[in-house]
Length: 315
Image 1 (cartoon, rainbow, N blue to C red):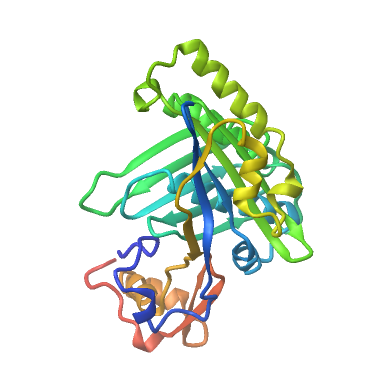
Image 2 (cartoon, helix red, strand yellow; image 1 turned 90 degrees about the vertical axis):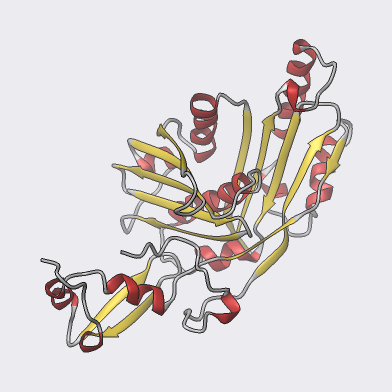
């Protein structure tokens, strides 16, 4: 059966059977940076109006929408730190009122996500997700090894859960600050992510105690950033990073774009339907039509049952 979550081999501009979803690109959404002579690298992710386009397609409670926005910004930031071809995803499964949370980003910055939830819920991520697991997956296709790190959900916020993942699964010191809320301009979502670079990563001549002090200083400064600063469209990313780290040898790298990245299409979903037995297709049909809903972009695709042929030889 075809996996509709894999990146399409057809470029978007040639994929004429895609649903009418926003053609939106934020050219400077991700600003990588590092602190010269210090064991610190990071990314500032600001999705801008793209967050509203992604979150607004789902009818979710306020706190669930906020959690979805945080996961989108976080996933974009983590994907930007990797060298890969394919997709990088964050997935949380739990026994709480939000049993599923998923966000993924391709190597070219196409991002999407969704959350399943009860109709009226509120609270922090730990309350919404309950007990379960958090998985980070890098999928580079059938010909490449698939990397996946899985940890139990620990912490009340998504940032705390990510920090627990870095500590237990990657043995890496990291700093994660996430922000998402509905502003007068619509939903906005931001992530500030930093990792401590090992000595062999280019910090020559620095003793362990000096590296410890440099990392402590960087995280202390990063912790002073406010939600208002992170979500302020009028405050450029370069200026925000300058406020935090101007005395710490701040060097910014080339910004990266992020775009609206739902990769569903009528043709791909039709391929999925063809993998089902005829009896299952008959059960799916209502009034002669089968409806498949893309959970990422919330678009319903309708197929005439008479035109869909199921997999041969299936029970």
